[in-house]
Every structure is written in C-alpha cells, then in structure tokens.
Length: 323
Ligand code: MEV
Image (cartoon, rainbow, N blue to C red):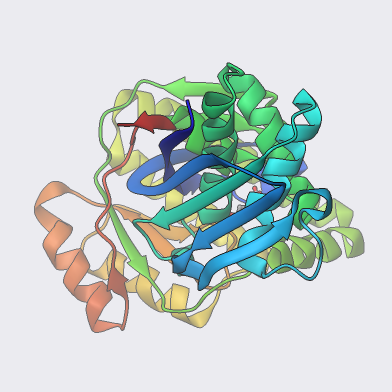
C-alpha cells in the first residue's frame, strides 16, 4: 500500500486530571471530533508535511534530522512519531504526510495525542507492520514523552481505544467501560491552556507540600473510583455530585481560573447535576452532567457568561482506517 488515511478521536477528561500523572486513575471519553492523517510513501529521504490547521504547508525535514528543535511547534509530534516508528523497525523511506482536524487545537481535545496515534497507525498500515493497540500505545506514548516531557498517556489511550476508559498512569490499566452516550454539556472558556506548563506548576506545588498535595491526589483517586461505579450504573445525578467534589480539589491544586469558575457556576445555576473543568485547567473547557430536559437551559446560561458551547458525542470510536 502506497498511501493510507486514518482518523483518531479527540478526548475529554471526565475525572482524575493531574492526580493521574501521580499514579492515580482517571476516566476519559473519546469524542466525535476526529484528527485525520494521510501518509504516502515518497522518493528520496525527506518528510514533507502539510498541516494547514497549524499553518504548516509543505514543510520539509531531512529524515536524518527529524524532530529538531528548530522545527515549527505543530510538526514535532508528527516527525518524532515517524522517527520512533522508523527506528523500531529499521525502516528508511521518504514520506509525505497530511493532517487535518475536525476540531480546533485550542479546545484541549488532545490534538497532539490524536495526531501522534494517527501517524503511528498509518505508518504501520503503509509499511505493513501490524501493531496491536498496546504496541501503538507504547510507541505513541514514548513520542509524547519525547516531545513534551510529561503526561500520563490517558489521551493516547482514548485516541486508540475510543469509548469511555478507566485509565491508570502510563497505561498500567486501560479498562474500556460499557457505558452509553453521556449527557454532557461542554463549554469552552476562550482561553488556551498550556498542558505542560500546568503539569509543571502542579509538580512544583507537590514538591513544596508533598503531604497536602498527596492527600488531594488520593481524594481525587477515590472520587474517580466512585465515578467508575456510578458510570456503570448510569447514575448521572451521583456523577454530577462527584464532579462538584472533583472541582473543589482541582481548585485546591490551584489550576482553576475565573473564566472556568464563571462557566461552572452558570452550568449549576442552569440546572446541571454538577460541573467541573476538564483537562489541565487554567482555561480550555468545562463539562457538566445535565438532566436531558435541562441541557438547553444549561447551554444558554453558559453562553450568557461568555462560554462557547462545543457539541460533542461521547464514546467515539478509536483510531481507524478511512477508505
Ligand atoms: C491534561 O489534559 C490532563 C493532565 O492530567 C495531564 C495528563 O494526564 O497527561 C493534567
């Protein structure tokens, strides 16, 4: 096969962010906004990259210098994924890669992990090196760590397996949960958060006060375990309460923001069962579990406070080949 196209979903963190970097579990759901990756074998030994969503059009890198620090930010996950894949199979080839996203990289939906998973999967198809999900996970997760140095890998798992997943740091546990589509409202604050910066900020806080912060992580872990049970029962009212409790702990980790608080309070006022930030914090999106008949009102109250509603369907399919 000379050319293949694959797609991988974005994600939303439901419970357990930050604590999952420290060995506690989290719950993530894949969303129906997808990253598309097309890989084509080319002559020569260059990687030619088209990623118009991040203003990269026809960027050329030498295969023996992939992922150099001088490369544009939006290209590094792609070129380091290629480097890691080629190194593990001893492959040398020229390539042309195009990426296209259904969603803005501003939302915090995991465009870096989705693109990384997409590239690894597409390369395994084009070079006929079949990889199971765990092998795709290991190659993709190592790529994320090579590029940004930090991360639990939950977003990589969501992009590969899809659905809704109970996940423990580094893929120690990846448990797909048998749940139907979730009644979630998602509001974007309009503020872009930088995940590695926020992860480092929490790491500094942990260094300053291991006792206190460690206890917060434990409590977040307990909430996540409870949420797993409530999800399996479809108890959205309980899940809303657990979201509120998780949010209190995230604020104690100092990763809340005025914009997030405004939207979270608005969602609760509009009748949500509960609401919290989703992801690294500091901006990006908030999420709320809502009774079906209150969804419209919750959306309206969020919009009145300046939030942008992002329509998503949860539990989307994991990485797959496109025709
Ligand atoms: C960011 O979306 C979630 C964090 O827990 C980081 C991670 O798990 O990689 C803050």
